[in-house]
Length: 251
Image (cartoon, rainbow, N blue to C red; front, side):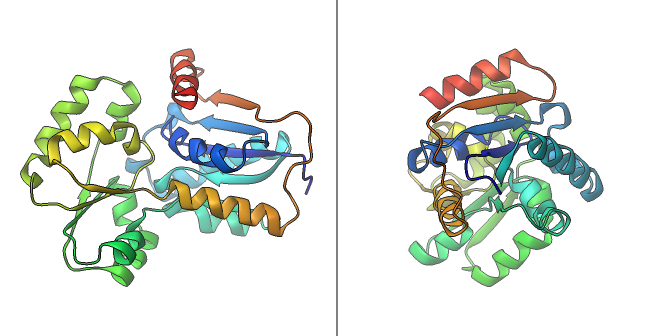
């Protein structure tokens, strides 16, 4: 594996930008390719076979573009396909996001907790193993069907209406919120508007640290003089998504 290769990051849309932002904080000198699969978004309502197929196509593209490591920045893809991808591509390091539920166990075990995630993530075997291992018995699992889609659209009024309808009943009753989809940190302020003051838990900072550890262990930290470049690819060729992506990255 070439240490001066790129790092591939993919998500079902632009939500994974929240993961890439955390990665850039500790690995600013690497080159990145971000793939937004908006053509097939959302992954949460797709079959395992479909998700595996989407992920394989993206990974093959990353391999063609000389990627030395691949970040699965989509919780649904991570839950459904990470194991499959590691078996199919054993020579590539895959770093997969997962809902930060263990953090509740570590830092706020007695707190009432709401896990917000896609239906696919909540129903996945991977998440259920995590959940039952660290269950604080004060947790509500909320499949937020369609929310990632609305965030992808970027319509604040629609997002606010969705949150009021789906989260309103939990206002004042929740201490911890696990953001189990990479799109959700983009609307953290709106979630807090509906729920009141809560603690948010997001797996992205821990993924970033793990990525750096994996690159270091495999002697893959870049020595290239061209640093910090990001190539953005959207499967539906949306210039609007590209503009929004770079606006968030620079914010």
